[in-house]
Figure 1 (cartoon, chains in turn red, brown):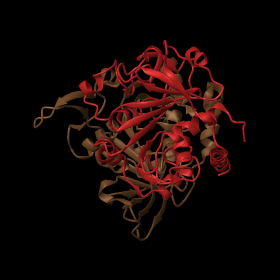
Figure 2 (cartoon, chains in turn brown, purple):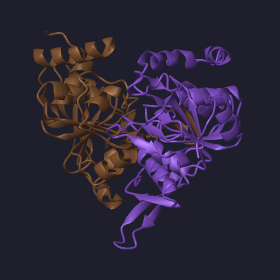
Figure 3 (cartoon, each protein chain N blue to C red):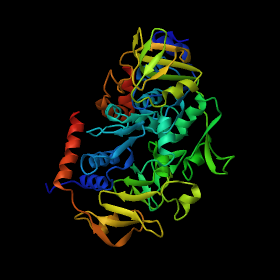
Figure 4 (cartoon, one colour):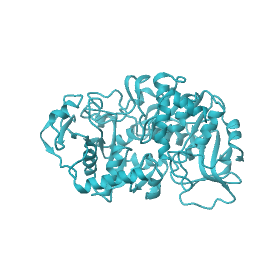
Length: 253
Length: 264
């Protein structure tokens, strides 16, 4: 089981960031795959919360949408959409927000709205905000899962859909954002974490076979590298089996 | 008091050109059949309101029914873009599309304000985001008790709400369960309400966690089994994930979409 893809490495790495017993507000796509992998492996008590109002969902396969029937059928509680945002997310009850991104910048600000041109006349119209702005604002911390390249990792996002650290230290406090902000960006090349002083995202972990130079080439800003970035362990046989089983069940379901 | 009518009659009577229409259903219970009937009856200049436009509004936008969209997430869940929505925003095809864009929390609270008879709702949200700068229905507000700066969003008051539910009884009381999203708020914030249902039954026996909309909050009920497809109705059907994937190719170019539309 030594062969694995960079996407599998990313998903495994993101799953490891979730601890058993945490409450996790899950975005669809890569974050959902990682959160479900964590539940299937080291974190069986992870509480998955989807914006459709499903609290404590235990799907056993990867849902295509955040409102698939399997989420409601396996949830501890199903609440309305106003309730999930107002009672559960807004007061800071949820440990970690698990988000994707189309564009992300060196301060962890996320763009999922428009790319190029301007807002009224964009080159590319993306889906928009969904639940992400308030997840990014109010979860105790945020983890972003996104494939890394120069298109997605930019010096400044074209549009701030969800706030990371704004333009640097002090901004989250000034804006009244109650959560601590993005703790990690987990990509298909490695792991980035904010510098404790500048809050600029810095390369702190590398996957096997990936060099610092490769990661820097795939980053649209002058990426700082930690003094000695950690070498992240490859997926274990158990992790890979669990992830592939999840995918297999999902495509045949 | 709700009247039980055909879907065609409900749409003919309740949905007019130029109306603000909220068709809700959060992934579950999306009122697709009603959307298709609106396309067939060639409604125009609609303002469509919906948290997740989904395929249903992609179809209405591509069909030329829509001049404005009020929304918070316009993608094909788990698949990718809504191509008709993108073509309208990026290229004004088949017509220009005005946007009023929010987050999910903002949209949900706007419905709550509408249902509550209030002019606005308050939330912690939008601070530092670009949305606050481009959307006129988002504004800062100072808490009169703590002095804290929060965000106000204006109430939604659609002319008509359209939803799909599992069941109604013969008096027009409506029952839905599973993921119930923001449907209760959409119905209660709207002037008129159209509900399609999987079945009409003699007695609505209680269901755990069901939302019940009393008949006097609903204008028309129409029986349309499968009316949520390719979305689903818990207890009646499964989400047709293959259709959501297939829509990507159908909607990607104007010709294949136009062929789909002609066959509707």
